[in-house]
Image 1 (tube, rainbow, N blue to C red):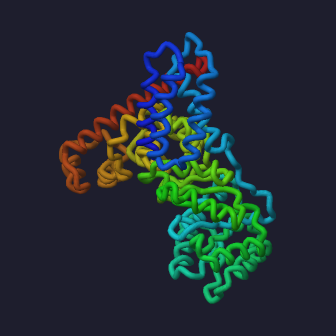
Image 2: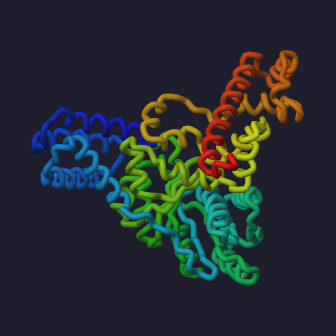
Image 3: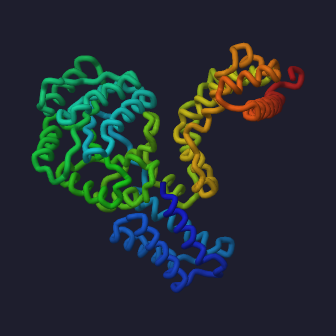
Length: 440
């Protein structure tokens, strides 16, 4: 995501490197390159022009401090304007209704149904809500079944009326069901439609009128680029939606939709989808996205994802085991599972400042842990709990059972041993600082 744009912007700022001060000539040269970078990223032409005009005005009005280089100042100005371009503040979802009604809209294939499942999971786990998913796509044969499968994975109920072809009535009946059974959020998944399909556009307008939703979210595939912005404009004219959801931001997207959509429709991006997994949903933070576009990483989001998987009781249990040098392969497996729940590995790595650029051409497979897990699963319960008993014959058996070789098994055991020693050392030093002198 945004890799090409980040690279082009970095090259643009190099024009100012070595310059003693900002002048109209070197700013014009830099911003000409910045505008090209934005256009190549499929940013709306008017948005790109306005953006560079504002940056130029601000840059020329700045007195550069001796401690700040012109290129650093330009990065700061561009960062602030990118943040402003994408909305400035983080936009929250309105959950004030009783029940809260969220109407999903968008084109066919934009990812509405999958996102409905992701949103339900997020509201259930993070907001402690009781969501009800509603299947109002009466046209696509597999739509109801897809929603049911997603719902079963997150243990959320689905309201369906397979023999009813009236989505307006289904939505109304679902809300009555939610009120009767105490569900506090109703997520209405509608059929994908084309903006030029007058009948379908009238239908979703009728659903809106009938259920009076707290939130109308327009779901759009970020990979469609500038077309996504044009479609959003047409849908907004009919529905006056509250916010945008950009899906497939983990794909080969140039980022133009994320940078243009707020300016064109004047509606905030509220969520982004960053993968196929149901955990792959993030609230959209304009400032953090600007950080990532400029290659600064996004350490705050990385920490937040880690905290979501953090189990305090499990951490205390592990700390005791590490202190006694009893950390074993069962614990190692549970730590791998927590990392995998955090999301796409390359996406996680790119959140670390400076790492995104270093790994942009490296293919990091989400199955990177596969061989490690295969090796551990090929151990007996006794071997997992007591790694020190793994002699040559046991290692050979594990290699054969896991489809790896003896070198890979030896490498894992060596890395595990080093990790265990390091963890004990770190835990020991922390305990030494915490405990009183007489109890160390």
